[in-house]
Length: 262
Image (cartoon, rainbow, N blue to C red):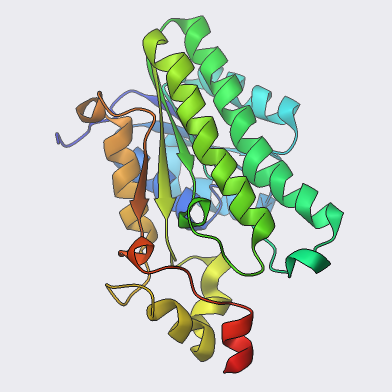
């Protein structure tokens, strides 16, 4: 891959204040892109944009609100002259036994983790089609799209939906110059997983099902995103690539019954 594979391209990355989103935004700028960083964490967002310099623009956006997503996509095109890459990262989960999961928690997880991805694909693609220039949309899924997890019915269902949005998006848009692809991380070292990694019992459960015996680094996800967004990946569309240390070969840790037994 050439040294600046994303030179001159405009991008939007949601969930960019920290974790995977921040790592992807950082890698994109290093690869030559300019990026609109979107998040609801205003302080974290401003700090991230400041650290990344002139090629980064901070924009507060709640991806569960379709109008805010649409405006963010248009703002990136206006700022950079084109919108070439969209990465839908923003998402979260809520751990609860299925029979005790409040309806509002189910809805809030889906509003961000599934609806937000759909809005990103929809309005990212609209901008790309209007400008008449090819583009790439990357959706951050999860191994939980394929692996059920105890207490994670809302998150698992949302991520399974993300995978199908990716496939449907690729089916409808690839012939019009827009590739839609996905990345499914396993356990990644981020602020959202810090509690799991710092708790010895939970860490032991996770490590027991990861053949590489370590969490994935956000930079590893970012490197894959740079490749998928580049011309070198021009024939990859409709697929979701797992970056999980091999955890899909073993199953998912029992976060409810397993921790209780310990």
